[in-house]
Length: 272
Image 1 (cartoon, rainbow, N blue to C red):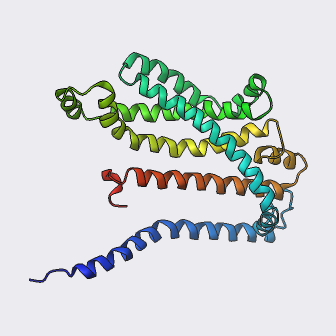
Image 2 (image 1 turned 90 degrees about the vertical axis):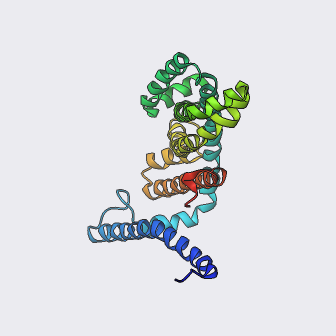
Image 3 (image 1 turned 180 degrees about the vertical axis):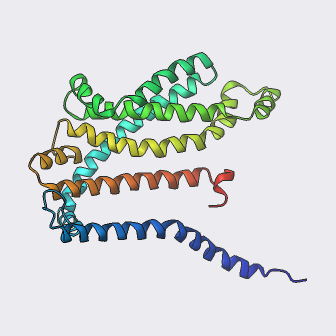
């Protein structure tokens, strides 16, 4: 009978982790590289006009050249998205925390949350400009309206998912409402909250750009896209789209990293 060498096992663990992460990252990266290469070949082979579909190499070249301006505009858009998400998230999470014990209140608000999630953002953006003006306030309001229902729904489901036996145990300890909420319901709700936040953080960026498109300064991604599209500067539009994608992916990855750290005790994260 043989026993495994703990030293060898410890040394093999990083290799297994690297292999697991590589299996997640490499396939989509290869698909992305192949798609970009195919795009470049198609534009070249069919002599597609630059204003219809520019080559990826042109977009990359201009992106590097205009990186400073794009970062500045992206930072402004990110500020709008972040403030809107903070406001909308605060409203959504707050309402869920207040109403999760009262079914009729939660269901009543849930109906309006479902309606708001079904309303196209493109129809809200012009209305918020009328209500709050053309500056950043209207964009923040639109992002809040779009993200509050998402975080309300996910947080509500999480708060209600607390184990019935655990709730009975808290009652047997004569724990008060706040102690039960903080020590039982919040830990159960956190995985759901972070799932909703991953969705909301990307939605916030999209909604912020759409809102900026309907008016305001050119010193943001949405306003810049509107101006360059009106002038048929397609390459410039694509550079702004690339910056928006990079910012959106970065936000998602940051939230996912916080999720893994905060919930490192959760069974779903122990294998990561």
